[in-house]
Length: 70
Image (cartoon, rainbow, N blue to C red; front, side):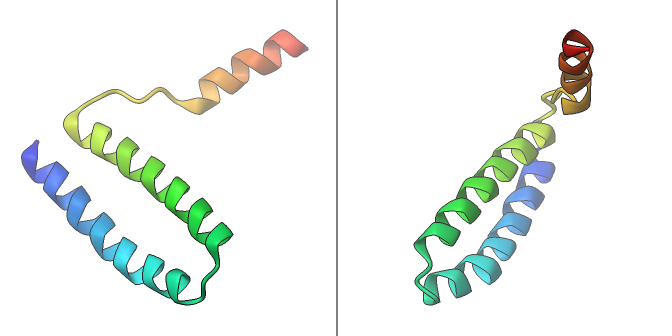
């Protein structure tokens, strides 16, 4: 379990450094804000998945909404 979390942290750190640094150099605040928002969401979801939390599938929820509309 701890190994999964460590792997997630290492991978996200490497990706974050290689992706966020060029965005910061270009001074694009909107792009940086959106990227960090999605990046943080993905990091939290992957960390929870690594711990063993069952994450619901979004397709099942969308199916229920579409069935109610139709």
